[in-house]
Length: 193
Image 1 (cartoon, helix red, strand yellow):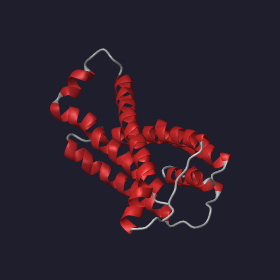
Image 2 (cartoon, one colour):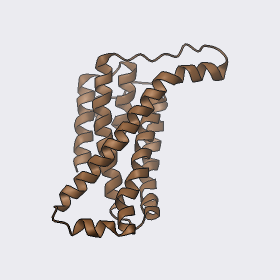
Image 3 (cartoon, one colour):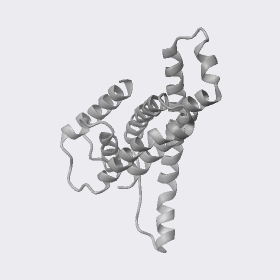
Image 4 (spheres, helix red, strand yellow):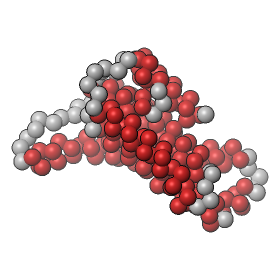
């Protein structure tokens, strides 16, 4: 129930921390101007920044998820003083589905952070601009924790909200192929736009 929330929050927070410095920080230090006068297309610069940020935030997300899967049962049993019977086993298919989804989510969040950071003149200003997006992602992640019934297929077409639903569906073995593919397509298109 909590794992999709943590994954999306940690992924966005990782992209937010590094991405603001990657774009707005370079503007603030004056290194962006020298980069823009080089004989490289601006689209190549932007895509390079998005993909670099995507790789960094994607790797951090994999580390977070692996740590949670490995250590959450020990932590929960240790805090309660008893074994709560918490176990999370993933099949190779689920691991592959999670990997593809995390790559696309890292791409989407990186694109959002870079796009918002472009409008800022300093890292502090970029962080201020990104905070509302962070709050929206936080609220959408929280909303899936309190959902008791299975969502309709069309809900998986809602950007960002579909990510936490898909993560929850993968971990609980309740996602259909249509819902998963719809989530992937919507996430990729949203990140591309």
